[in-house]
Amino acid sequence: MNDKPLVGILMGSDSDYDIMVEAARALQRFDIPFEMTVSSAHRSPQRTAEYSRTARQRGVRVLIVGAGAAAHLAGVVAAESTLPVIGVPIDASALKGLDALLATVQMPAGIPVATMAIGKAGARNAGIFAAQIIAGSDPVMIEKLETFKQELAAGVEAKAEALQERLVRDGF
Ligand code: RP5
Image (cartoon, rainbow, N blue to C red; front, side):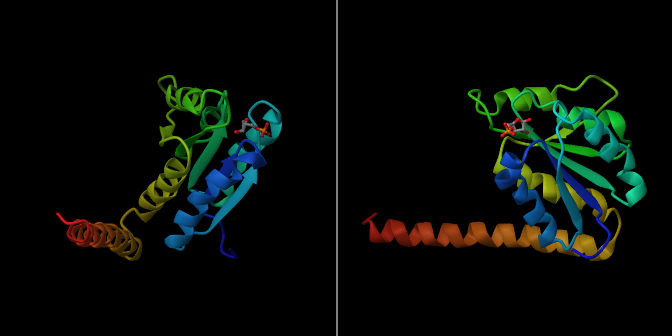
C-alpha cells in the first residue's frame, strides 16, 4: 500500500475490523490503494470531522464508513465532505445491525450515504462499489470489473455442475 490512497475506510471502533476488512480485500482485488482508520462520531467527533474534511485534499476519492449500534458515523462524514460516502451498517448490538442500518440509510435530503447491506457482504460490496465509482471511464479498471463479473458467473456454473453431480450421487 505504498501508492497514495484513493479510498478511505473509516470504522467506529476497532471491534468493526473483522467486518470492514472485507472492503479492504475487495479494493485489493482491484489494486486500489486505500487507507484505513478508526474514528467515532460520538467518542471522537473532532477526529471524525478532521478526517472527513481533509480526505479530498489527501487524494481520497471515495469514503467507506462502517459503524454499529446508533451508527451516525457515515452521516457525519457525509456532512463534512463532498466525497461520495458508502455506509456499512454493522451488527454490534442486541438489535443485530437493524439499528445501524436505519441510522445509516435514513439520511435527510441533501446528505446522501450510499448504504450497503449489514455486515460482511455489505463491506465487500462497499469495496466493489468504490471500485466502480473510481473506474469511471478508465479502460483498465473497467476490464478488471468485467473480469470480476465473469469470475462470479463461472463460480455459479461450477456450483450448478457440482449440484448436478450431487443429485446423481443422492439417487435422483
Ligand atoms: C459503534 O459502536 C462502533 O462502530 C461499533 O460497531 C460499536 C461498538 O463499539 P465498541 O464498544 O466495541 O468500541 O460506535
